[in-house]
Image 1 (cartoon, rainbow, N blue to C red):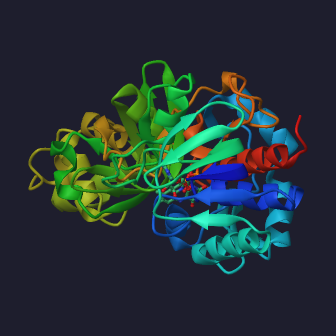
Image 2: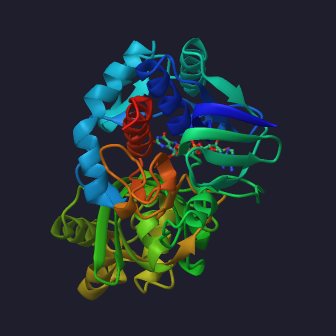
Length: 408
Ligand SMILES: Cc1cc2nc3c(=O)[nH]c(=O)nc-3n(C[C@H](O)[C@H](O)[C@H](O)COP(=O)(O)OP(=O)(O)OC[C@H]3O[C@@H](n4cnc5c(N)ncnc54)[C@H](O)[C@@H]3O)c2cc1C
């Protein structure tokens, strides 16, 4: 049996829910159906921002995106951070700005964002269908949407199926499959905002140590530097600056890392400090040369990598050359990155459906009138810090408005 809708939205995540609310408010008379393959809507949204939902960022959207950047910026010019805050407040989700411009719901509960989006959609008359997977879409007027249950027809269809990250064992059709079957092009997909795996030997003794550092990643001609807490783990490194460079590492399949372990000290100051310690603590063993300056285990690893193999040596035996090498190791601790922890640890997908076949003001396909796409399925990837959800809200809003408009 076929069921007819004006608007059918595939994917009840951030962008699907927001698009449903927007379209339903724009066109209250339209029949809208939202289909979600999970048991409940917004499952991934619940996990965002460590359960607090870092839903946007007030520090500006320039230089925070990868992929089809011009497309994204054109969209942000229509509906940016301020419009998002107003729209969220209008739904009963006032926002609060915390560290580094990160915006959260005042409740600091991701669950409340899912709830309020769901309530708003239901109040506006959106019909929900969960535990239902869309298998295929046949283009036409109307579109024919086949699920693993019933088939539906709809004049307008939005694909808001998200990315490849953290989807567990799901093997059914993805939004990428649905869109490529309709003639859209897909870039290479790599995991991003994910822990980085590195060579093991140099960091073996460092598992569990955290350091406030600066990391510089080099992959071919691409260089990126990020500051913040770096966590050493058995597989490699993690922490906010590592998550930021991870997309680049994944895209290149690896890269060279250089860690500044004392970023507030100039190279000269570090060198002077070590030379002074060698004199003051000449009678002590090298084991404790850096104790008090940095984490003890990290200090000992630095010394060994700088060529001070025998830590039982006296500090007073070290030469100026040794001091130079130790200081250099502290400022440019090298590591080879060989990949990332992969899809099930990644927060987002780098890459996606190519946007040149979509209108950045409406998210409508240029190939099929009435077909729309929003969110992570498109080739727009943001940094860690609320930028990916901002893209979901922006693209969903524009699609929602366009779908709600009278037939164009
Ligand atoms: C652990 C974690 C933490 C994160 N934290 C943040 C954060 O703090 N800030 C931030 O900006 N971003 C964060 N992100 C990224 C952010 O969650 C995503 O970028 C965002 O959810 C993308 O929205 P979306 O609507 O495109 O996709 P999703 O929210 O993933 O929604 C897509 C939905 O489509 C459904 N679906 C897929 N295929 C089908 C199908 N064939 N039929 C029916 N339904 C289907 C899926 O089940 C899913 O519910 C985080 C991600 C993870 C994994």
